[in-house]
Image 1: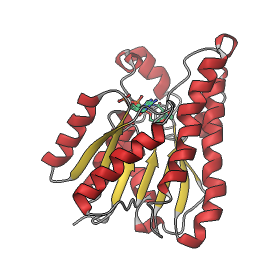
Image 2: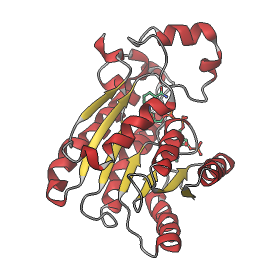
Image 3: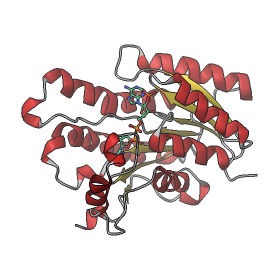
Image 4: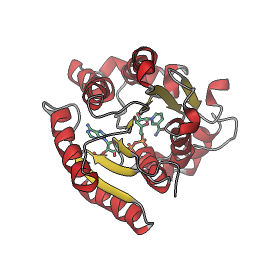
Length: 253
Ligand code: NDP
């Protein structure tokens, strides 16, 4: 029996990358996990199947964040899935992981691209938390995935870094408001972490990215998932409003 047995969790953007690794880890720890995805139904189904094969419990929920009605759609599916499996709509753990990179230089960024980055990376997590709080009992856990780029300059990703700066504010202010309910709210800031980006298939690029970490390697999704698993556990009950550097020492400079 894992330390999250009897708990329910929503991990956004769990069809790939760190979200996937987090969903798998929380399920291994015993939670019933809602595996959220935006477009890739097959990938989400594969994550759910893998968790079930390993004896865990999970279900997929779709909602394209940053579009009108996104949070409503997400919670319709979430509550239906929870109710079916637990008889209640209680949500103990929320991990706001889904996010989009900019990938466009500041001088070429259009207002539409800027708004999209903010809609997915900052607005959606705000309204997901607002909505989740009606389902979350005392003692709940909220983790928001930020980025080391709020502390490490990269002139090519200004709009993205701004959106991650915004999501970090959620931990500071919500942590204060939700303390009386025993709900913790924390930010986790990964450094460069392997995902499906073709850059990770180019050895020279990986070597250059690895050199940014004091451990001389790029992060693996589970490096971050394990940090999230600690923050949502009972052991992290005294940690709230924090910024957790999960960049493999990249921020040491
Ligand atoms: P990936 O790019 O591998 O996966 C992104 C996930 O988010 C997918 O599950 C995707 O679902 C989902 N998603 C993206 N946009 C939307 C949307 N509009 N609506 C719904 N779902 C969406 O993610 P990473 O593991 O690379 O990154 C995870 C988080 O970590 C992000 O917030 C990112 O900004 C942050 N981060 C990443 C770093 C890195 O180096 N990888 C470094 C620092 C921070 P689907 O495919 O189904 O659409």
